[in-house]
Image: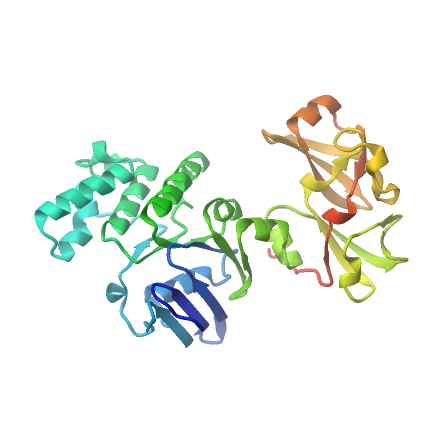
Length: 365
């Protein structure tokens, strides 16, 4: 595997805790200046993999290379990687300025250069006016920005972030996403970000590595992960999908009383197939798509069971063949429909919008 300058290369990384396999044979190349998110549910191995990269955990087997040099046995302090934890770990008896300056002082940087660097960092994270405040005087979002500032002050080669926004409320998380993304782009720094929040991963990353059971199940751009999920697990975990278990009949998929035309059906062997379709890809006949453009077999009549207003879209729950499913309607079309609970709808399932799988994931609890 190639290990050219400033690349971080993971080769067959495995980690055992007794009989538990926390990370299983992970191979990954992270390019210089790339923003990569490890995304997955609790217990999938994403934090353990991050800790192996930082040096806080030793891989049971495999090789970790940075800048062409194997770093498996290099202690964390010598790896020159910045780290931001879920807990901010700020020094309560130090001001914002002193917290950001801490790593620079440990490196015995001259006082003048420390002052210049800390001033620059506080401007970058928007905390110049808070330089002489203590952590207890700051909001959670401000404390997290101090932690970010402290990590980037030492100009690390790689910045690793372990669910840094999970303790914050939704609006602050969204604001800080922008701060983190802008910092990464302005500094050109390599970032590895661990999260269980798929929206966060899709919003931030150049590439997303979706993990389960210690393995990377798919890696790609946010668009690829969302639009081209390779397995039913990815389709369920990243975004929202409706699932249909059916059987092949005459080149279509039989689902209860319905026979759906499905694109790409020939790519899956066996008689039983599993279909997934995103709620936003189901059309409302004669509202979001004209009836004459529809494949007749893919039109179904349903009743609106629950209607939830979600801002830009309205989410409608309906039942099809005893399965609860979701439909997302843009706000303007919803106004046109004037939809109420128990109203009837004619829905269209476009053949090309189905994802087709030969296996169904076992849903995580």
